[in-house]
Image 1 (cartoon, helix red, strand yellow):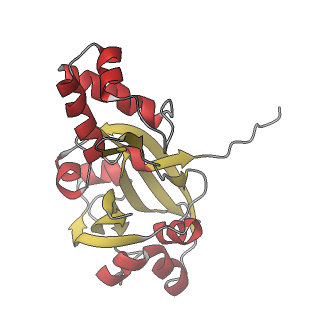
Image 2: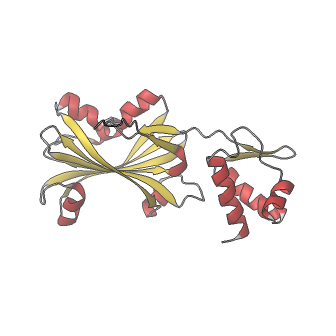
Image 3: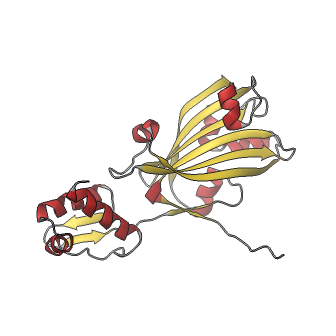
Length: 238
């Protein structure tokens, strides 16, 4: 690992864990060069990447200020649509529908989605613009026989609103898995990742109707430093 990468990773870690608090100055270039025992040119290289990543703001003759990082809190308990989350948390967002197609469920897709082999499904790929950056990539599969008349316009707005309000479906529960995953080709091409991002947070969900029919599988890939995932846990008494 190059010297500037070592400095960069350590400074990034200290900013994200609030060792260096938002709206305060980082140590000067001379001080950082002394701390890390490197040249000022190496420090400037690391600071330039931090600035490009939106973690600091540099002003000549003033120093480098840590920028406040607004994180969106994604609740992991409960089952809520993206539109409902956006409305409840009052953040601006735009949804682009990149793929809207129908597929036949193969053996491989059945193993991922829990759908029966041979049935038809919708394959939908959407990306979400949050605070001017594409930060979320959602890939969904819906059973066609359950969401038969779903349209691309509804996918851009709220699929759950259509399923519940127009089709009268009773969406009951989801099984979720959260993993820290390596950035893949789609992430690099479709999301506005930081130069130092090597991972995304992937939330994979199997969603069921009240009669236990699996009708949706989704993988939602999130830029690591944009979101904070929260859960309320209550201890069960024995």
